Length: 381
Image 1 (cartoon, rainbow, N blue to C red):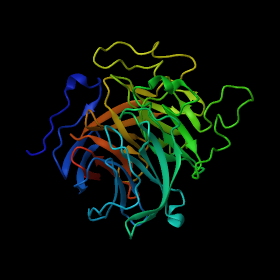
Image 2 (cartoon, helix red, strand yellow):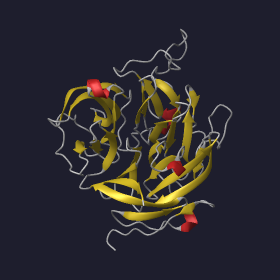
Image 3 (cartoon, helix red, strand yellow):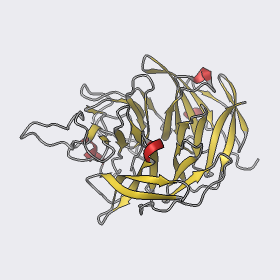
Image 4 (cartoon, rainbow, N blue to C red):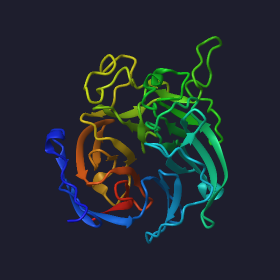
């Protein structure tokens, strides 16, 4: 039983959560609450895949954290690395991160991608835009359009997910860089923030801090929300168009949030998490009047990464559900929503670290298996 990973211990699973049996490798069948589904291997041989985007011609554009971007064909063929990717700080959790197509990709061939950008002092999360030449396997006209205004040393908590809103503005999630966590509450810093920018890097006029009173303490105008730890999953709600995101807690306290403009999400002052190893409380409590409470929090931590609202027809029983990948618990969480609240969770034990979750244009759910370097797809069994 090559590649077998045992079930996550039932002792650490929340009460009432359904868990299916352990999964092996390709084309395994998962038992779910609403029937069986098949886990299909589409491609393999990747090195720490981080993100994927679907091209109009059916190919996948993928990032690998060490600093490579590749195309994957419908037959699973993996291309050589694309030329033109800038140097990345490929250490610890850093490297080449998210990738997304511009809303007008069909005509402008523009993509955006986030990465840990090396600097003289350390590194910072940055976003670049480029024109994709898929046939020549290269990026042209690469330009950095945003970079955090601080570049501390260290190799943790870069974020970073990229989501275009319905107006074509770009949300960028930014980590607190671990040792600089107090800066998540500082509005003069990009650390621990979600920012919103134009595709050219400009500041949208309706950002909450785009216009500030003279003499006031200046907030960074790109900031949309603050008090975040390390957001590695984000998506637009299909009905409201609002940004939803989840973030890693430390020892407990992973959060799913509805991200509203100009709101504080608490880290590291208001949190369900605890200090690593010693387990002592962090901050002043789990709620405060001026802090947005999470829609859901996970304790113990599942280490969430990747997120998608399901709107397809392949799995009609899952319409409107949120799917969240998990690294530590190596699973796919299905969250049922009612009136903006999570009313049920089902955990599908994949047995691998799931880095990204996407709904494809075919209506299937697609996953990136970081453990074995694979692209996976869920099909009806």
